[in-house]
Every structure is written in structure tokens, then in C-alpha cells.
Length: 103
Image 1: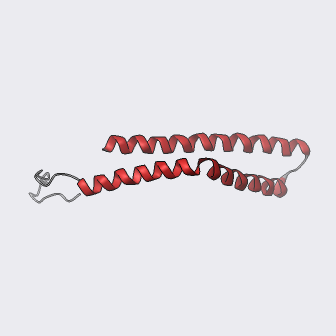
Image 2: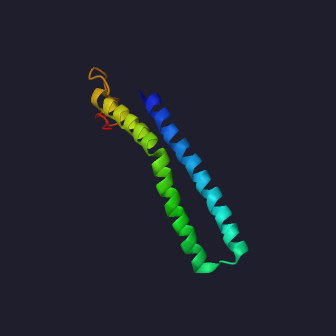
Image 3: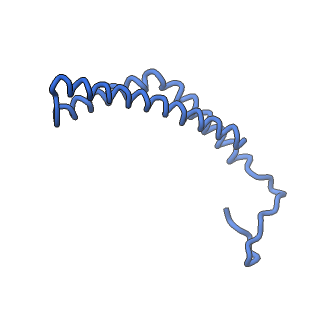
């Protein structure tokens, strides 16, 4: 169960990494184009912020359903793990003081 949850979390993080790589590439390209055109300082920051907001909206439109499916699967695995949990017949390890360790 834990390995399935880890695989789904890996997919989510991998997808986020790919999206962020695309963001950085577009931002660096836009920054160099704005510098070549002669736009610097606060105006460049405002233009890049607008581009970033547009990229965020586009990425949620493109990958929104995939994020929803992956997050739903991860939460369902987490719920199943929380409901099933450890069998009640397994003894919890004792601490040095002899008391049961709480997890």
C-alpha cells in the first residue's frame, strides 16, 4: 500500500517538475527578449508576472484533470491505509521505560 502511495506521489512530483521546467524556460526566454527590446526594471517585472499568471492558468487548464485524478488516487490510498491500518493483533514496540510507544 505504501509503495502505491509513493508511486502516485512520485508521478505528481514528476509532473510538477516538468511543468516548472517549462515555466523557467519560458520565463528566461521572455526575460532575454524583453532585455533585447530594451524593457528593464519594474516594467519587465510586471510583464513577467503577467506571463507567469498566464502560464499558471494554462497549466491548470491542460493538466488540471490529471492533477485531480492523481491527487484523488493518492488521497484514496491514504484513506484506505488509515482505515485498514495495522492489524490489531500486532503488539506495538515497548520503549525503554516499559510503556507502550505512541505513534
